[in-house]
Length: 64
Length: 144
Image (tube, rainbow over all chains, first blue to last red; front, top):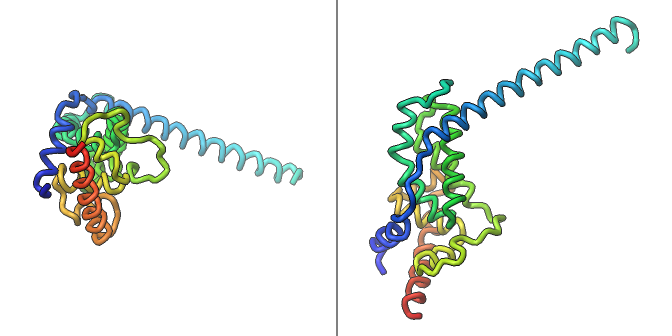
């Protein structure tokens, strides 16, 4: 077997695969992922602000 | 990010999905895993579209690097009677990936090294051993 024979052999095996349509699925999944990331970031910032506010109030009222 | 698919992204994916699904099928040895890996790679690309410098390398890295793991216990091409698939299944994940990228995708050794983030000499050595092992496995299959 020569190196040039490998490509056609591999092509034969994979030529019968079904057609797929991934553009819409990938875009929709990307949109969902981006929204989820944004939501997580917003929640994280709000939680951090809440903790900071609670600590500040605790300092102000002399609990800490 | 638009809710409806960007036309340029759609045409980019349409032009490549068939070829990359075939390559990923041979690398992973399973159509379901190949499709999942390709969808994951295109999904990641959509997050940064159109700001990615080289979308082909971006997708190929996400598509093929997970195939190199040594920890997967899933055997490629289970129950296959095809001698070529059996010969591919005998290779290590790295050998199989490099063989397919060199001979089906027709990438150069330098391009494969870039996609798989390996050194050129490692790709060269693995490519030689993959070719040798694949050739012997095909010959053994023919003599059976």
